[in-house]
Image (cartoon, rainbow, N blue to C red; front, side, top):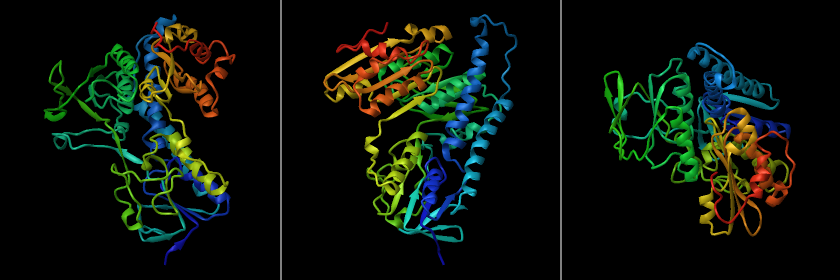
Amino acid sequence: MAQAYDALIIGAGQAGPPLAGRLTAAGMSVAVIERKLFGGTCVNTGCIPTKTLVASAYAAHLARRAADYGISTQGIVVDMKAVKARKDAISTRSRTGVETWLAGMERCKTYRGHARFVSPREVEVGDDRLTAERIFINVGGRALVPDLPGIDRITALTNTTMLALDTLPRHLVVVGGSYIGLEFAQMYRRFGSAVTVVEKAPRLIPREDEDISAAVKDILEGEGIAVRLSAECIRFVPRGAEIGVGVDCTSGEPEIRGSHLLLAIGRRPNTDDLGLERAGVKLDGRGYVAVDDGLQTSVPGIWALGDCNGRGAFTHTAYNDFEIVAANLLDGERRRVSDRIPGYALYIDPPLGRVGMTEAQARASGRPLLVARRPMSRVGRAIEKGETQGFMTAVVDAQTQRILGAAILGTGGDEAIHGILDVMNAGLPYTKLQRAVPIHPTVSELIPTLLGELSSARSPSA
């Protein structure tokens, strides 16, 4: 006999636990099903562990630069076992916090195991059968491991298995020149590995504007990271204790040999073994759960939140999915995913904070535009910190005066970008932010100056 609940939540990632909190507070009985680690990607294999590693790598980098600040140091040593232990401790603390919260939540029961739909209102978890009128899918995603030539002959790491390393790779080859790959590339270079990034496209992070791609490449190469672009025929072959990576680039050696290989070329949703066909839930062509603007699936009473719905690939978008669903179900609101302004960061050093459209996307829209750019070498805070790489840029609709998008590639860029994001969310003209009086000395204080330099022609880079 099935155990009945008011709601079932499949997956304890960033959207599931807070949704359980709202539903139980509203008097509903809730079952949360988790097959492996509470907290999802962010807590276990994503944001928290990787940014902890980024912090350790930054400390090593800054220590090597100590003389630039008038500080004398001797013998910088990176202890990878201690680095991993710090990362594990922080990640474990976050995961335990989520699990403890759910365990102590009134009217909530957790089930450990793999959930599979039996019908639109029934789910199996091992020997248990659960039923509810509301079911929320929050199963996340995992690293994509494509069937590249030779992949079955070598050992490849993903962002998950990379986190288990407590030794330093002699030469790390990263296949994939986008966000995850570049963060690992820089952190391991700073730990002391030789690093090569291999990217099939003609430039890094191709979704960004070309000037940002070029600047990021310069930053990484400046730290000794080799970058191989236009790798049209990536293949692998064992070379004794090493891995040969065929690249067939337009220039350079046709094969790179590394001690370790990291595949960072995308992610896929965890939707292939949920029995969704038995519930009638439709997937799109990439395997993501198809949802409407309120995150409801093709079956009334079933919602999909987080990475598995293809409507965002970040912790903050997953959490916003929870906010949208909870507001619509419990607060009588009509919130929509399409109202969300996209924002994210690339956590290399210096970081890239991005919100809204790229300049290329804005130009493709056909709007009359105003554009501005300011190098970080003209930002006092960056000069004081000795971190002047990068630039900030903004693009504005010339008719409405609304900011369409902005990027800050530079020290503090991941934080400073929120001032622009807030103005965009409020639907205010850029002039409101331009007239603000920000605190000195900060990176944010140059945003009004940047907006004061908007023009219909692209601003000079220096």
